[in-house]
Image (tube, rainbow, N blue to C red; front, side, top):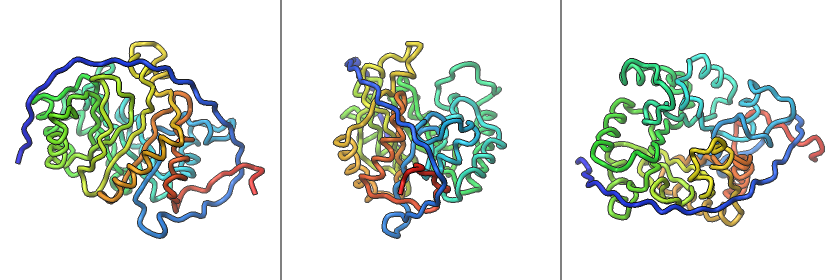
Length: 327
């Protein structure tokens, strides 16, 4: 049965709050082998990582080449968000290289190409939507074949509000993506307005979308509340964007990337979310948790703290490198 929506519009409430940058910590490493297990011998259920692998300085030794970072990243986390795919559909040779550089169990959450979500920062180099989707699906086919494709994430812009046209657009996208695991992330609050929240979740369940649970600044209509709910029996996705309201509402500034995700979660905030993640874990088979609060270099540290809070341990990570002076 199709889920029907009405249309609603309401004014944004803009709040401002400054957040201080956290201190970056540098480590020097020595090669050792990981020896840890997953969830007391159970199948791995909670995958924790960060968005991208290039900018997380605390993970890497000085002087490391950009081309070597993914292999080192994979010694710390079992999953990563591939965001390069948002800016350009990646050639298969790149995907195949990244597959080879990661353990067999490693997972990728692939961000959908910008032309597929209506961001379109610059000219889209495809003659039609059919051509664009065909290129994207061909690009990620190696990940599917290698069992390393966790989710394809469709993150829609703040102007993608709830209306009939956009609901139909989501149906069309889901049809194009076939049986691939696809997640929805909204940035317009109308989808989770009290009048429509349950209908939005019901729509996701009916159409086969994975709900993305977000922690982000509550900054008016261009942000969404944290809706702790599962819409897919196999997978759930959680993304941490920080709570820097001041930076969230400054997308037109030249340095917006330096401030928008500038936030370090406290232990109290992480503990609250650890409880939420455990609740999600009871409702679905796999929960993917990604930290995107990296304007100040905090994502990797917060991800490691969440791993510790949840008591999650991972098998089959890449060989780990530790502090030279560690016992």
